[in-house]
Length: 383
Image 1 (cartoon, rainbow, N blue to C red):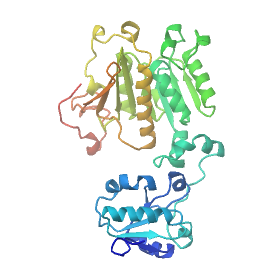
Image 2: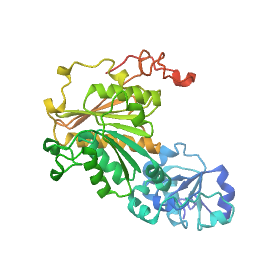
Image 3: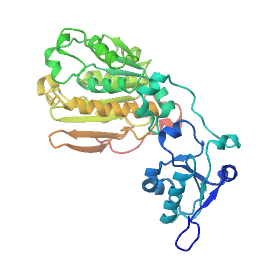
Image 4: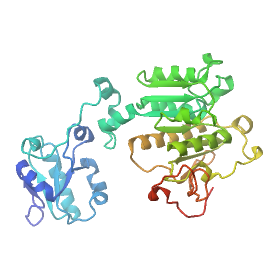
């Protein structure tokens, strides 16, 4: 393969030569995610052939960087090498040989542990194809515990997708029973369950969807007396409450125990989502230092709510939960995402930690002794 002057735009080397060259080169694996998950060079970056041209400048902005490209046998990586040479990358080496020989020839190689059963690999296959998840990430989800405060509107959509995607334990805090008026938006419940405890109805639905998910019922309201006990055993808390009193109680307990909380709220056509990570961003009291009077924040039972809105907001909350559990992406910590269903628009407002916050501020009894964790962003508080 040569350029218009008859010169090869990249070098072809054997697997043995590639092992020797690897320490001094940026390694690009152009296989598919499913191949990567079966084993890969630990220092490599996955850029499937179909994504190379779109993402290479983001991954390797300096076109003089020494590159080492490989696939399974060298054919796909040769095409990628030629394309990168045309883009101006000047030092490209392609591995022309079976990459399975890499380990035999002494090259470092990561092979996934068999973390999942055959049934689990089949169920979560599409999700595990994502490079940021794979078997390791799916195992994290299966070992995770998420507590939903409320088994109603916001909790319904979130619970469906948390369970279906493999979150191992889902706790449900709710002391209410299913009412006919719930069915317009609370999709965990069905008409034949009117009068049944919401946690029981939710458990039946979630276990029918994914029998492997452990659904723990907490048939009680969250209060100042039980908040710490309820949230202590969970990794992430999803706030699906509909009143300010409970939100403040939850916030203070979560800050004290350093539990991340994903918050959602709805009103008629409008919804809001944010994430509170104690001492890494603002808390609920930073956002709302004082509770608004009831007439300015009526409940859905008074103001009304579009049936689909809690589904949209609940799924955005679930998305935040997944990022927190997997440790990937950028959460909404420090950002309030606002959704207008009437106009189908999203807006975002920055939220700052309040140095005077009684829960997470400088004088808070829950603040860490670590100077780094005690540092507070000194900026105007935006509600």
